[in-house]
Amino acid sequence: MQPVTRLSARLAVLAALCLPGMARAEFAVCNQSYDVVNVAVAQDVQGDFQTEGWWTVGPNQCANVIKDELVSRYIYLYAQDVFGQPVLTGTTQLCIDPRKFVIRGQKDCWVMGHIAAGFIEVDTLKTQRWTLFLAASP
Image (cartoon, rainbow, N blue to C red; front, side):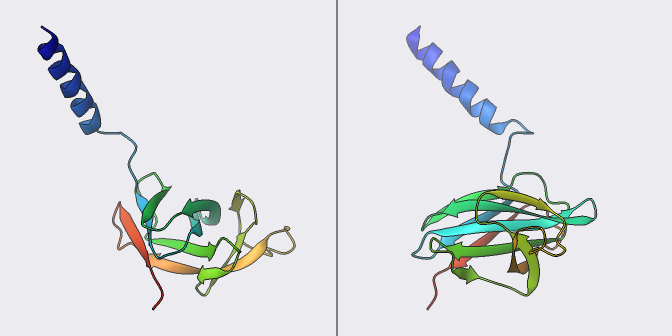
């Protein structure tokens, strides 16, 4: 009777993993570099930019930075090393903060007490899920 109980428990776990609506990564960042990086992400939320950070991503690890299905075609990303030096920068200036943050609105970062940083624009091609890989520098 015990083997049937173990099989039932395994099937229950398998069924739970297959249920729709379970949390899954919709925008993930995978670090293929040799360094630990801290990642901030931005997206349009109800017509205004919202930035959020930080996720610490070790070498050969991934972080789920947006857990909902993507609704914006463009996601913006900024990454820095553990010393605060940029390792991934772009031309879209958005606000960040040294500590964990969620910032709504992106005008006058300095006036609001934040720091302006150059985010890269990621075109997700209107997909619902996307994974971005950070590669090691040559």
